Amino acid sequence: MKEVYIENNLVYKVIDDELFTGIAQVKRKNEHLVYEEEFENGIILYSYLYFNSKEKRLSTKTIYNPNKPNVLSKKIMYNLQKEIFEIHTYNDDGIKILREQFTNGKVSYSCQYLGKKKHGIELGYRDGGEKMTFRCEYINGKKNGTEYCLKEDGTETKKQYKLGKRIK
Image (cartoon, rainbow, N blue to C red; front, top):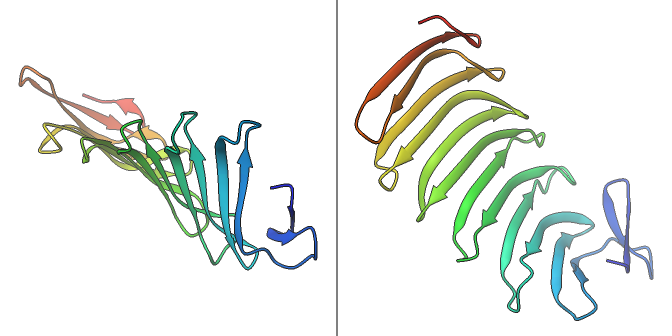
């Protein structure tokens, strides 16, 4: 990382001011790899954050939009068992549009976003993604429509909302 610099959202080599292609890393004094970024012609394509462990174990992989430097495309988070447990997806402008959580490789939670606010459908699942336990629609961060909830004992509840205010 000390051998490159950023100018106008592009990464250059310090030694000759050429656009950088390759991998830049951050390591601790004991040579433990903490973080790395992958570049092509000065544009970041991926970044990798690693857990602090004896082996090289990925914590978070971030994928960038190759047509818009430094704009996020997708962020994938892993647990210590090397399984994906959460994915954030972004639109072409780098605004978060979807958050998904996984249990044993199956979707257990999904919610649409518009930036930092829930905007769209929020869903919760159990039994390996087979049974929907929660459903609600949001508009600009506020519940809107029918909120459905299925409890562990099989009891169903439904509540009505209009732009964040409960109406039933």
